[in-house]
Image 1 (cartoon, rainbow, N blue to C red):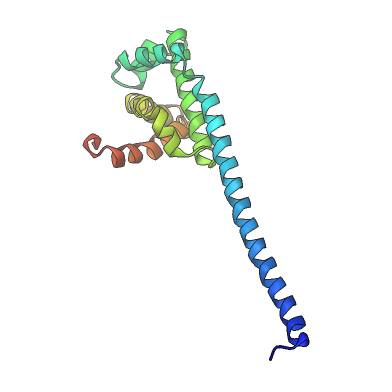
Image 2 (cartoon, helix red, strand yellow):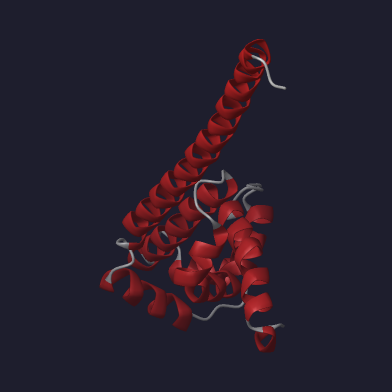
Length: 170
């Protein structure tokens, strides 16, 4: 038979168990809310960046994609800051745009899959077009970090694209 003393001894144990369950559920909800906030902030940040991808940026990209050069010196002769400041500024602004995204991806502030969904084509095309220039620029100018975050971004995005679209593997 259950006595009043037994009930008084069980009640604190049940209370502690209920409190522990409530605390665990509260922690789980707080973590889910925190992750939702992080995801939302990433999306907002990326959309602010994406707004910079306007008609002028698209025109710059198409122009750069039409350029032809043999090597670094030929590039500088045709599109360098002294011979063609307009072309040079287009290259630098496009490169800096992608470099900025690369830094944000590296620091975990933007999910590479989100970048892939919205800008993978331009990133891949731009790097593949300009890679020979940047690689040679690193050697000629003794500037090993030239285009490093653009290259990093490319190396993060390219595998995602290839996984989603195996027919595009090169």
